[in-house]
Image (cartoon, rainbow, N blue to C red; front, top):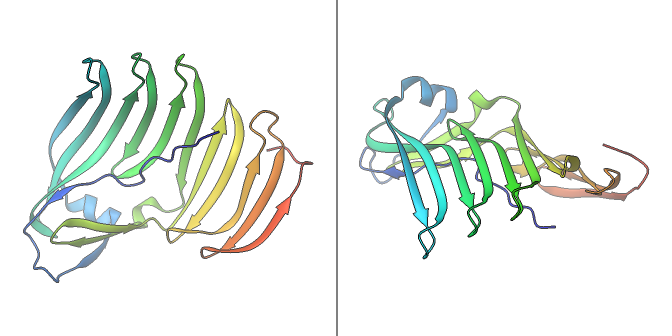
Amino acid sequence: MQIYTCTILAVLISVNGFSQTTRKKVTRKEFLHTAVSLDTVTTTNYYPDSTIKEINTYYNSKNTAFNTNSVYQFYIKTEKYWPNGIVKQESIFDNGLAIKSILYNKQGQKSVEEIFEYKNPDDCIFTLDNQGILSKNLNTFTQLTYSHGKMYTKKYYKNNKRHGVWSFYDHKTGMLEKTITYNEGKKQKWLKSRNTFA
């Protein structure tokens, strides 16, 4: 089964606020506290036959405290569609952080749901330069994946690296199949098991 992971942080950005070499690190809380929302935009992309392929909703903001000229785009919601007009994927964001992503089959039935849980979302680090938000450190978060209502994977990250025990389940029975333990991105231990339910 193919799993699609939605983007954690959606931004773009235009510009000339910093010099070529200046970079500044700020927390998400600091950045949002001084940001000014400009407008909300919805864009639509189409298939060649004019049926809807994708709808993106985001808001533009400026932050004169850190970059006087850049405009930052933060996604609110994205929707992708199958060629038959049925929703293929819905993703929900909260000020740059992905919260939930749902995949549907061509008949419109929910097949996979991903939920992102952040330990300290306000402490996520944004690195800014003359291109806007250059990178992000999401600190500690958990990615939970459900298939047809049953737990499929449970993954942990620390400082953008795989960390802790990752659990993988049979998507039909919900039974634990294997675990992999990571430490700061390095695999430590692999264990196969079929005796535990999520």
